[in-house]
Length: 484
Ligand code: GLN
Image (cartoon, rainbow, N blue to C red; front, side, top):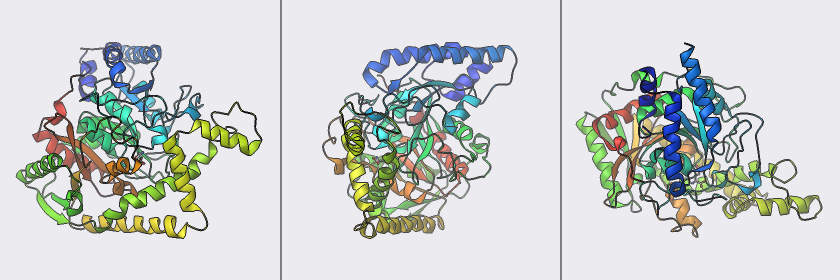
């Protein structure tokens, strides 16, 4: 049962073939047997899960209307606030933080009768590409437990790929949904900036962060997006625009589809096995009548550099609130006010977070802000313009999600620049604010998943999902499950 999709689990309950309690038990079984190997979760409360499932079954028995995710377990990245449940950001500084409120997206899950199924591991404060920056544990890739699942939402990706939960939520600031989805062989989607409320999402880089789904297939991703999208006045960047019922049009292929293939996404850093799987996927689209259009994103070569200025700059400001006074861990050492701040932060933040705070503070400092921060914002505008120009000639931009398949734990952990390069194809999407999706499109000879990235026009998630579904309907990658 735990290999099923959310849509299949909903059908089982609607036809009386399974109860929410039975479904919860099946996933708890898989969780228990696999968690020692995968380490996908930071916390999980079995009793609370059973209670929620029983409540859904009681509601059904009483003939009350049920929500869109009734009885479906959903795991939540530990960067999203959950009322009464510890929310750590996988950081020592927030180890004991219990939020007094739910994030908007968590409220939406509860309103649709989802079963909140644990909090997932991540890189500390969502900074990283492998989950090795978690203060607690390194999550493993279900396809090969010597390897990392990607990051920063590695726990959310691994638990879905490893069938510990059928759906999960992650966050994507520079690729943290799409990259782990690609490395774990599942679907992951970053909505348009402003599509989903960030209320209750502990901020990394506020102008880039978005919440989005992980799922086995495009239908489940569309379902989750319907639930979490929409206006919320508590996030002033959340757009007041109606949310389409994505699943209604999902199986309508896009006629006359034009696919932009950026030459910059097929450069020398790209692994040859990834390239051939992505090219084969493009062929499949051509078979279905799509035309490939050669497009150029000339500023994409500067995107990674711009991202690693803008994101740390915003992070250094956002993380200033964790000082041992307002929030979080306070040092036991005796010190004056500034000393208490410094010691608390020194003890509470890991190495990568400290590195980002230093980079961010540096690029914002009065002597350097024009040379770095302001320059990076100009590059960001040009990256966005590249996409505007590309979308004048195509409906979607396609390419690889990652330059390589999942790497071994420890392989890049001492080399921040090598780690940052994992995001080379994903960061421009966040800088431009456009929606992006990664879906499985093959495996390497070693049996590691490969991801195809689809990038769309702002607020055109409906079309992006339809385009993704066209490929999925013709292939069976999304039906594979790893033997853990
Ligand atoms: N890997 C990127 C970083 O470390 C992206 C992280 C993210 O999207 N949260 O910043």
